[in-house]
Image 1 (cartoon, helix red, strand yellow):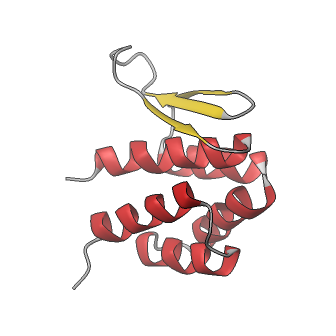
Image 2 (cartoon, one colour):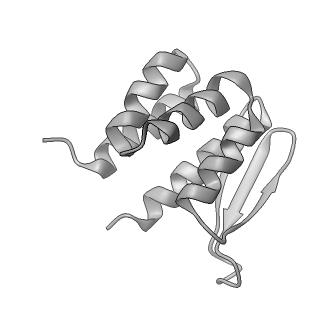
Length: 111
């Protein structure tokens, strides 16, 4: 049986590689998250450079966390948390970079 963490690791690797289709990414996301809306937000951020979808996923998975998004990089970190604790992402577009940062940070919250 695949654990949530293992499924999330596969999703992160696929987003990093950037070669999967939107449908493949959404199927991988559905294996990680209970809500299909989260999977759709992952798909939109991945395939359509949809910053609104990346923000919606950020707010759902990391409520209250701070974020920074640049042209090809993003960083997320706990609000009023240790400034040395952050997760980042780099990609060919800002939404995918934010998606990577959010997925990595969420992975860090799993035991």
